[in-house]
Image (cartoon, rainbow, N blue to C red; front, side, top):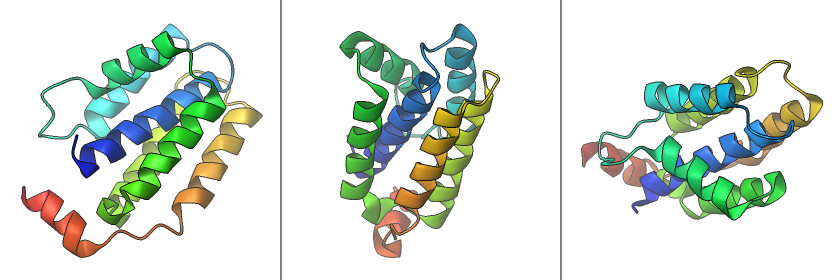
Length: 136
């Protein structure tokens, strides 16, 4: 996968972690997550449904909320040179929408969203890299 695809996969993992924060992922959350990914972060270069793949892998592997979040943030940091300000903003919108997909938004979900905002804030992409990603 490319660095940009890795970033999108990582945000999917974080969204999964948020969906799991209040317990088991509900059918409605899974559907909303798919719709949100389709609307917000679908990459034109993907020949696959990233939202479906993320949920299947993480469900199968029984990844905890903490493991999903920490693994995803590691990927975000590794690939942060491709992280444009617009992509950061989109990622925050995605996880907020995922949290709101199944009411109520719990304290655990809100804490994870705030943690993500804090963790991603200092990351600065390199316009040379993320500019190239847009050209490809």
